[in-house]
Image (tube, rainbow, N blue to C red; front, side, top):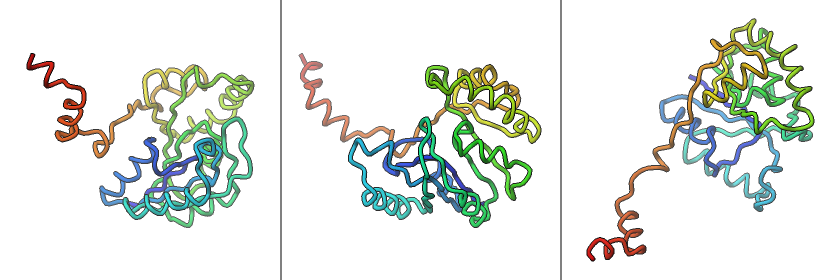
Length: 217
C-alpha cells in the first residue's frame, strides 16, 4: 500500500506522532512518503538551519526507508503554514492508496477537506486539539467557519477524524459540531524503539546514584 502523510511541520529527529507512524508503516511493508512544509519557524530558536534540516531528512530516509518531500510555505498564519498550490499535484504524483492528513484544523487540513469528492484517493485525518490550545484572537471566527463550511463536508463524506483523547473528542463535538460516530479515539502510543528496558543503563544509573549501597546498608 502506498501511504502518504501530510503535515505542516516535520523535524526528523523529534518524537512526534508522524516520526514513528511513518517508520512503522514502512516496517509493515508499505511504501511511505511524508509531504511537509520547508518552514523552519518552529525550530530556528534551537539553531536548525536549511542545511541541517536537509541532512536530517536524508538520514531519516536512509534509516527508515521513507521518502520526505518538502513543499514551500508562502507564509505562516496563527501557527499554520500556507503551502503552495502544487501540494495537491505532489500528492497526486505519489499515486497514494490513502493519505493521512495530520491536523484537520490546520489550513492544510481544511484545504484537503474542502476538496473531498474531487480527490483521487481516500483521506483520514486527526486532531490533537484541547481548549487550552485554542485560545487566540481568531478562535471564535475559526470555530464559526468550521461549523458552517467544514463540518457539513465532514458529515457528507463521513470523514473519520481520529482524536488522541476523549477530551479532544469532546472538544471537537462541542466546538466544531462533528458527530461522535465520526471521531474514533486513538490514544498516543509509545515508540518501543526508543522507550524500552535497558539493563546496562539501569545498572549504570543505580551505581551513579548509590542505590546499591543504600540497599546494602
